[in-house]
Figure 1 (tube, rainbow, N blue to C red):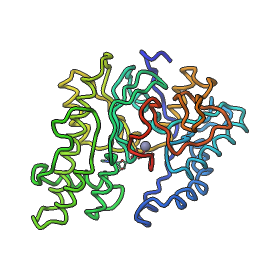
Figure 2 (tube, protein in one colour; figure 1 turned 30 degrees about the vertical axis):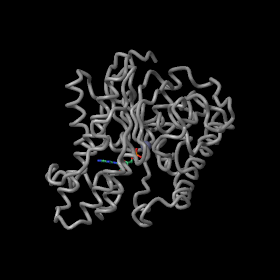
Figure 3 (cartoon, helix red, strand yellow; figure 1 turned 60 degrees about the vertical axis):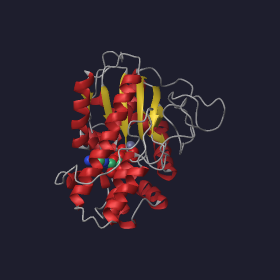
Length: 351
Ligand code: KG4
Ligand code: ZN
């Protein structure tokens, strides 16, 4: 594919098995339970995906699987299954970075060329990246504490709204006054491109547990307004810091499903004279089609078959090149931009 003229894609099937029921039952993600669910469901999920697509394994050009970052039990199940499928069918296997799926999803649905600015907002990450091509990602800013989705989930837990927290807060916020509760804007007026949400989280806790009599919908609306103000402020700074002529601002990851966020980003795009691309909500939250698309992009770019880089042998890999070796080991931690400092980042507890 020519990066200047993305062909886009057609989704034949997108089968998702969600574990939110078990998260609700246990009050959080239990790694053992999550891994077992992968073992129990993966064959049915793959079979359904092929059925709905109306094709057999023979028709595939390759088999792509998330190989990290994330809870390692589930990742190992997916990678092992995909390797066996690829080996049995004589197809190329692609071990992909989960974040690359989010980063390239906008090109699945929209005619967006490189380079674009990506705001990646999920349960495990909160970053701005310059996407210069398939496999070419440069991290600009990242959170120094919580990821934005994590902040939504923790706030929802505190307010006893249930999980996932993002949609619950969004629905409640729609009924509230976003200026009713005074909350601190993270990193207000400070230079730099990083994010922080722990101070906001503490202030929300005080508002929830204090005796000011704030209404839950006002707390939700105020939290969401301030959190998004911070995202928009940092995205603006990142766009201004980039020298390359950006084609668009693109948002991806579960929090991108939030309508209030896309509206605010649209306004930012108008200010900056840049189109804003927001994939449809089911493609923002984790799904199989986004990883399949990342595989398509890598196949079209001729990256499959190139050697995987891990020259220093630390297991992190040294390049974001396709790691299509059947010996590839899943990675619990795997920054998309391998040149970025390893000590920072939102952690890789979820992805
Ligand atoms: O990308 P994703 O599905 O999984 C990760 O890779 O983390 O993102 C999940 C996160 C959760 O924290 C969830 O609360 C958040 O995305 N989320 C939302 C919304 N829908 C999902 N946050 C705010 N508003 C939403 N509508
Ligand atoms: Zn994700």
